[in-house]
Length: 171
Image (cartoon, rainbow, N blue to C red; front, side):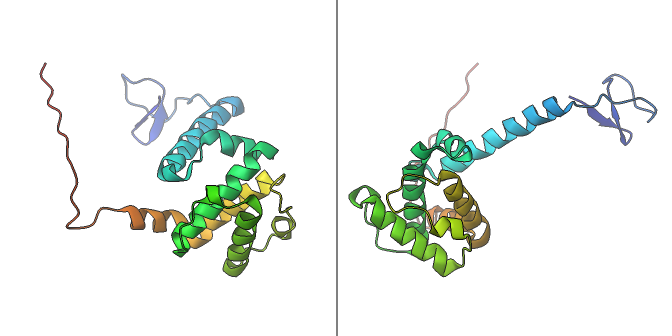
């Protein structure tokens, strides 16, 4: 860890920097590792926010590489997410076949203005296109403020009863 001392990055914690010291530069490999670690943390946090929708970080990794095993999970995620946010009747997506989920998601994203033609050309059997679904998910988060809407829906309101557990540290 480097400290900001007198407006410059100093490599030595014990003395103030004069600005003439050369700070060690991170190699591109080290920068990549740092960025990758932060990305993993962000995806894990996103999965916690989406906890009730059954998505996990591994599904995101698989979709990044366009793996077919992530496709059905992403259709289900998008379907559940859109039904929650749109206030649609809350059918259990496990009760719906993949074709119905896909038709619902495509129609809602069309309504919202999602413009990727590749997305609308994905097959109705849910066999491929996990990377395209990841892009649609990202677009939805950004343009429709889906996370903010979910958090607003799930926040504790005045008058709600909650249980509080206090732990005491006795050393």
